[in-house]
Image 1: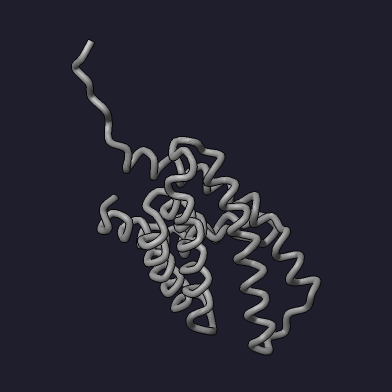
Image 2 (image 1 turned 90 degrees about the vertical axis):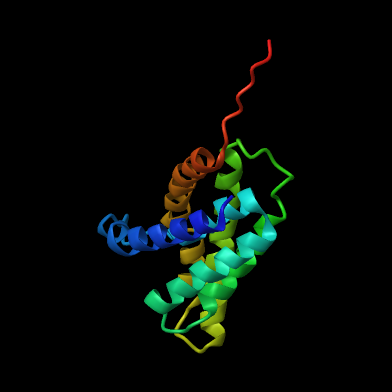
Length: 165
């Protein structure tokens, strides 16, 4: 998987996440497509590149969306690193793996983000943290996990041509 292509995917995802996706909220919730992309890429390329791309995508999110720089970068870095361990453990063609890992990553991301905001003395209540963890965002992210998983599979799978009988 080419580093340049993955960087283009992150930039393209950032453009889509900032321009098109906010037009289609469900109950005021939009998906975290950067998280989904990091999960799919980490499953495809492993922990080192998954962590690096998580750090890059998280830093871009922090610069554009967050009032505190570094929280998204750290969380997405950690998610990319941990999910990258499963690179060779599961079938790469199976669409269920990105869905399961996206659900787990979304729950971890929301819990960790709420925990960081709590310790940074932001106004986060326990009910807000729990409702953000188990929300529509999980379903929305799994929809994008199917789409991104299919696209990444198409982009990075080389056809096998055999001329044997």
